[in-house]
Image (cartoon, rainbow, N blue to C red):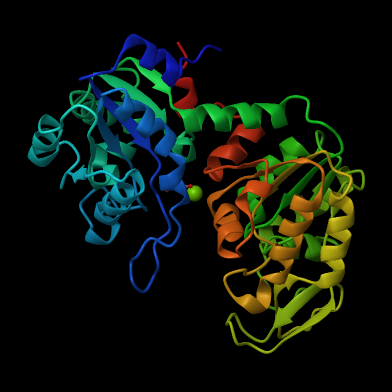
Length: 399
Ligand code: 3PG
Ligand code: MG
């Protein structure tokens, strides 16, 4: 596989050229205020942007935010992101009110060498996510017309066959940005010959989202630790009652099958924190995983589980973690996620945190980001990579 990267483009010279950069600026927004709750994805793309501006390119950034339905929707405007990007770059970022219309064209035309523009949300246009190749292609034509070269730095979106990810690179000289290059290098290490023991920690709410990656990882890993909402479907498969905890009934049989085939590699919680309700101030207690009361729901893994997971993580040489262990946004149910995160950073291992939620958890809990080997900006993308799937955005960069 040969993918050209940003250095190749810089070597050709970009001064005065209009360079399109697909970024994943899909940041979490505070539900009340609409403010940016975590700017990690904006910071992650700065190395690519400053390399280009430093070399005198006219940089045109585009991204999606949230899941608007193919038409403008003010709650998903990228305008606040443009402001934050300008602060982080310490430079003016020109914001276009549309993606490929008059505002986009005039904003791009007004760019001086070394300046940056951000276009409005790609998903305000039906063509971006269309399953119809012609409809996507027509939108990609309009996007491609705005630039002379294309840089993909949107690792979080490389698993999407969308116009800005898949079709624009077919129309312009294309390279991988610094972030995409680093993410792919790290994940290739995990998918190749990881140093052992290789321990994977999975959490999050749904088994169905993680099934493919569990199947793909089981033969590769030495240990697979399962927490988060999805552990209850596994506990049910072990024959335990789970009260009113999150449960995917149609997945119980699949989980039973996975447990049988796992050769003892899968570790499940032995105790859980149960509550009366899904609320920050709900009454809660720690109970054995086989004694969850019928009227209560599990919202975190318990301390004995954290200790067991920590013991499994201690000797690891490679660790991949995706998905919180509990409802970490509520302090009463954050101890499992915190404890596992601390055990990961204490191990003398190359550790990779995959996924928007786990990365946000690391920052929200005030943990030191630099104590992890790599924090991926892509949740779905990193899982699909580890599943061995072809990622449309990476395939499009290959020559
Ligand atoms: C993400 O947040 O996972 C990426 O930005 C992709 O977003 P999507 O799942 O809405 O395509
Ligand atoms: Mg996602």
